[in-house]
Length: 280
Image 1 (tube, rainbow, N blue to C red):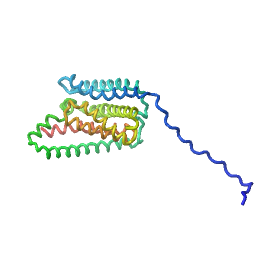
Image 2 (tube, rainbow, N blue to C red):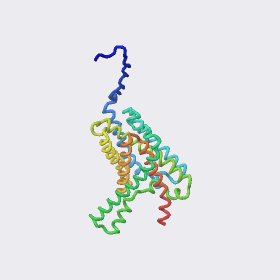
Image 3 (tube, one colour):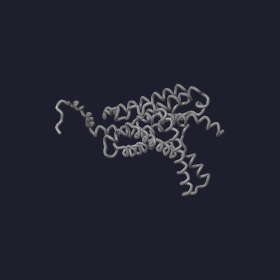
Image 4 (tube, rainbow, N blue to C red):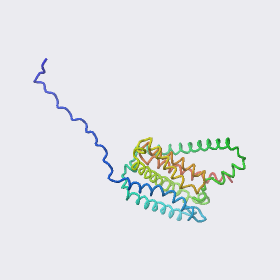
């Protein structure tokens, strides 16, 4: 049966355009390697140099003016080092995972992740302590001495008296130091470190599973920078860093991790005066 020539078919719509493959980065691996070396050395040098140069008082001093000065110095110091690394790599917004994802869920997810991280650290610490007790069977005095010798040296960071009696110092620590120095700065370091790993060894670190591996590597480097604070602090910071790296990898964005990190630090600081009051 022949087709009726009077019937005209509508013109075919063009097929959807296939997006082009990502262009190869014009930046060589050697330049990315310099970027990675700079970022990898930053927490280690800062941790050990900070201990050597620190005086008798806490790092954030015991007054508002000193706290603001130290905060500004820390942000500026990081900006200079980060800028130097960027001059070599020319890392893009996508390299650094700076896109705001997942929309209006960033803050609620960050808050939930902050609680989940605290619970996860507590569970891991409990399991590790139980295994240690079963294997070594130490005396109670030995456990107390180990915990005291290796506990996080929080007093080296903030002044307990100022936290308890100076509301401006307290709220600046929560609203400025925790989200900016603790949250945004450290997660920008992590995304920059991970960008270096992905760009130098894409087969190993560019996939989602590779991103988890990269998160572990970044956490180890960041944890080593806190070795002067003791083994317990280094272990806790390494675990927290790994979990934040996983969050960053899952969402392909630093923002949920930055919010979670800032809230984690802020709630930790907020609980210090209460904990000190209970210990008295």
